[in-house]
Image 1 (cartoon, protein in one colour):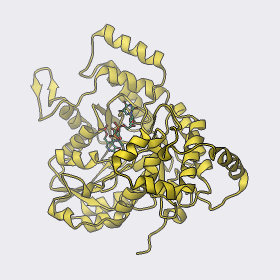
Image 2: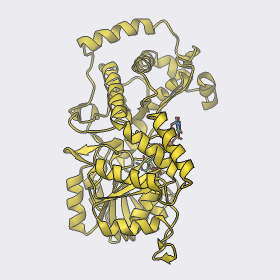
Image 3: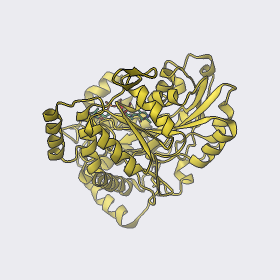
Image 4: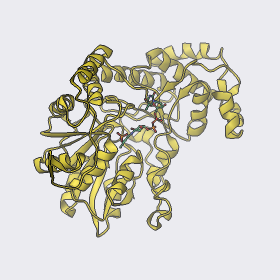
Length: 438
Ligand code: T4K
């Protein structure tokens, strides 16, 4: 089968064979100095004394966080919908221009509770490529998970694959705005409407993103965001469910708090999915720095793009310039045209203390507890499986500097040049590779 090649089919994709230009010549200078040092996987010293992470938390103003935390301590109001959670919810609603926001302890419970509040039953369709929490949350809600393939250019759930996966009891599609880029929202809305299915968006990675200039948050029946420590905007752990549906929001408020509608009134089943005040303090602090964090990530992404341009076989997933996006992920695709495969490059980088991540591997249908189910045993989802093999996320965030990006890209280029030697080293047992690296 001839694959649509992300290197050539993405109009924005950053890849030019042998591109000259200003960036090209600047890179050539670094290439000369790069030859001076031996790669760590081949016995040299790691390029970085301390590990560089993909998900190092952004902090924002420590003063603001400490002041809010002192407020929490002084008030003795630690949880159960205190003033900071209420403020955080208001700020999220305002920023996302959506009427209702219910803050929760994390996106995984938010997704499960949203599914329950929507009254989903039977099976739901979920993209197979993505963080496993999407599927796990549906299972937690008592639903059967059907995995669909992705569009290889965007890594978003593919509408044709959704159609093929629909079963008589399918009640919803759970689409993921992967990498913060919005999915193909309009076709999904149309498809779900025609089939009488609900549409839930897993927007865990998409806080601050826009779709045609409209903030993600008010699409479908509901959207669920994550404020996990590794997200651009974090509340240590946390999440939020946003919706335009007032009745749904009311239901969610009960589900999040044991079903309590008042001190002595229990109106429904529910769990404890509340966010503590100290987490809201971090969320508010983080939100105050959102624009600065996003701007930093944009500069980092641009630096990667400039340095990797001209390296055959490597492509960065593009972010449309006219849309907002936290650019919390620098998504590198390592294709067969690069002399090393993705896993070898991953080990090269780890040896240098660059903790790149193979997000997202394995695919949902190839992971437990799904892979042994009869519907998944023979399921083949080619675009998903290819992405699982080729994608490598590189460090970004406010703890990463432009200079570090340059050095990471130099390592990647050196790795390409010394591929044969690395492949030999990489054929060693895993322990030896690790011993060489970290
Ligand atoms: N849906 C989607 C599409 C998602 O991406 C996620 C979460 C969810 C749903 C569920 O949201 P939550 O229930 O978590 O709110 C991380 C995050 O734990 C996870 O939240 C995130 N997606 C996923 C993409 O990444 P891991 O297992 O890769 O995290 P971990 O602990 O390996 O951390 C990544 C890197 O960050 C490491 O190099 C260490 C560094 N790190 C991490 C933490 C937690 C730090 O430096 N400091 C820290 O405090 O899953």
